[in-house]
Amino acid sequence: MAFIQFIKGINETVIPEVKLTRSRDGSTGTATFRFNQPDIIQPNMQEKGDIQGMYLEDEEGLLMTTDVSAKFINGRPQGIESLYIIKSPTEWDRFIRFMDRYAKNNNLTFNKAK
Image (cartoon, rainbow, N blue to C red; front, top):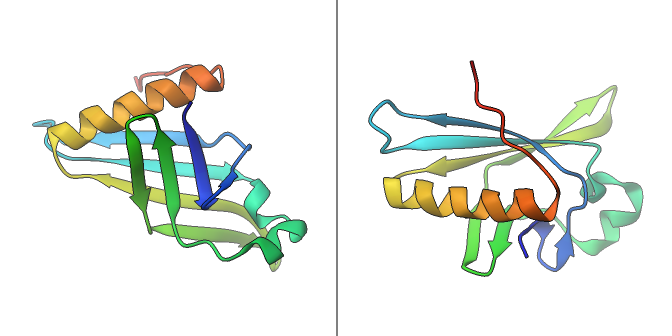
C-alpha cells in the first residue's frame, strides 16, 4: 500500500498530477505534485490540524518534504503544490519504487515527455 498524506493519519484521496525532472547525469531530480481541490483544503478538514508537509508512505517507509504551498483563486483555496527534491541516484530509485506502488494502488500510468 502506498499513500500520500498532508496531515499524519489522513490519506489524501485526490490523485495529483506529478511532473518529474532529472539532471543529465541522473544524480539529482525533482518531483512536482499538483493536487486540484484536494481533500485537505476542504472546509471540514480545518479542525484536523495544520499541514506540516507532504508524506509519501509505503512498505519501505516514509519520504517527506516540507515544500508545500496552497494555490488560491479569488481568495479561495483551489489546490496544493508540493516539490520533492531528489538528491542522489539512490533517492531517485527509492522515489520511483514509491511511485510504482502508488500508481498500482490508484490505476495510474506513466507518460514520458516527448
